[in-house]
Image (cartoon, rainbow, N blue to C red):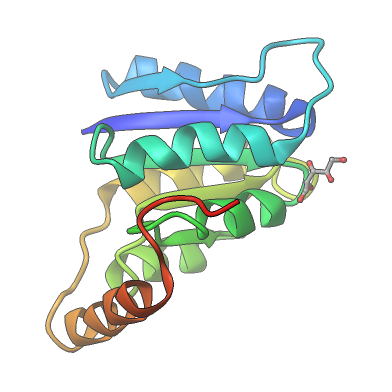
Length: 154
Ligand code: RB5
């Protein structure tokens, strides 16, 4: 599994803890910024990572900002992305089992490092249950097909 990570300034420290965890576990990732001591717009960094998952270049993304909310909003503007802002073990587990989440967003101002790492672990280890939930994911794909155009319109 190849993971794209990104954060804004508010999420930088938690992202650093998460990328250290991924390295320790031997999970491949690439970080798309931001770097330390930058002040940036979360929109740009969510886009950098989400477009790589949308294109199939990466399997999943982990995005961190202050609340996890801005990152989720931006990521969900990309075709094929099912970004879920997870706050605890339960939402991490259900986001995988029922929603087949391929993009985890975390709020560094809400979730401390130990809880954040636990959410990441659960989100990575939990399988999608498929069956009745697949039918619902297919409906999401149908909505995308109706509403997403392939190119950006000016
Ligand atoms: C930055 O202050 C903050 O707005 C951002 O990290 C995020 O929480 C947005 O959703």
